[in-house]
Image (cartoon, rainbow, N blue to C red; front, side, top):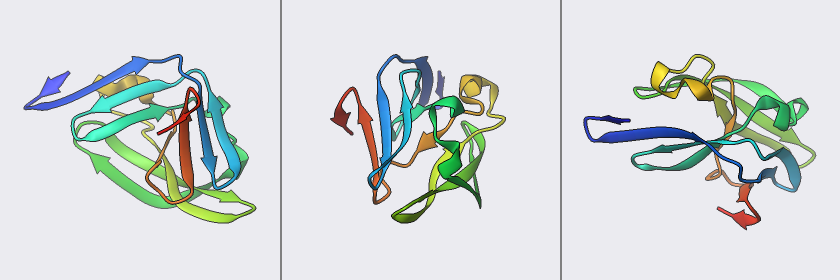
Length: 122
């Protein structure tokens, strides 16, 4: 979908996605939704069933995207400490990206967060 020069698309993937925070595996999924968006790297939205939710700690951080809606955040608490606001989700996204509702994405740009897709670190 394109809106005034801004493209955004969600497609179902079958890639194997593993997310580590420091040395701890936080997510392991072969059911990602891949969101591509102008100006951003591909984001892998994972079902909560494939995420170790016991490691997540609710954050007070929120954000608004004019193309996706309002996001809520979690920090990841491992034996190596807390990585703040490393995970986000759109609980009620805008209709054009509705499939990502309730799924979780990880900030691979944050220090200590590693996103591996089919064995390759992104």
